[in-house]
Amino acid sequence: MISGRGSNLRALIASEVRSAIRVVISNRVEAAGLEAAHDAGIETLVIPHGDFARREAYDHALVEALRARGVALVCLAGFMRLLGPTFCAAFPSAILNIHPSLLPAFAGLHTHRRALEAGVKLHGCTVHVVTPELDGGPIVVQAAVPVLAGDTEASLAARVLAAEHRIYPQAVRWFLEDRVVFASDAVVQVRGSGVSSDSMIAPREPN
Ligand code: GRF
Image 1 (tube, rainbow, N blue to C red):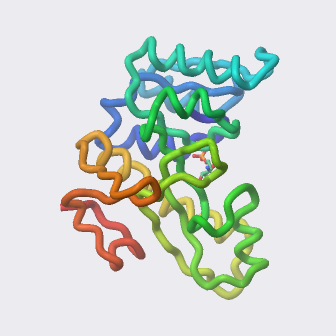
Image 2: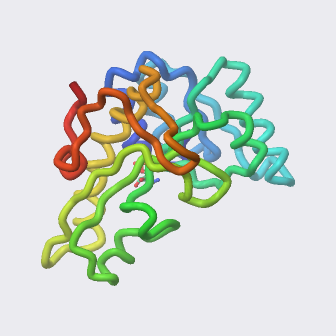
């Protein structure tokens, strides 16, 4: 599900998870990512949030559309709407999001600006399981990038985005291969991923 540019969607389409993508849903008709889906021959659907008076009704419409297409794993890729408990309960432990920071640091918006203001030396991105708590669900994988002297919000964002495009397809593949284990409510582990602290800094494809 997308709302805008769709570069993470493009990364998913360019990866081996492409054949598993059933539908791309946007809440905005002008989302550029819809074109990427269309070009790839993937069904697109626009469900504008403005058409619904209450969040609950919007969430319900999304769930219906996804269920009708047999979707088992929901991937948010720049989808700029909060999803309520109804939506989360419909896909337990099966909604992923990509967030442009090393969570739990910098949940919410303007992550790159806030990282620069905070003076952190490492920044990055996180794929996490979605819960009703904003950017609060269990972490699946993270990639770190350095914050360099002279970085601007744009240069830092570009460095992080390149890492996003690596780790999101990787995380989705782990789910599709049924290798993800919930060690507790908060902790996710991946069977046979070959993930070490080294590969967290510069994620590689798992063996
Ligand atoms: C990405 O930075 C992602 O981390 C955040 O929203 C942005 C979406 O970018 N959730 P794109 O639409 O995938 O290019």
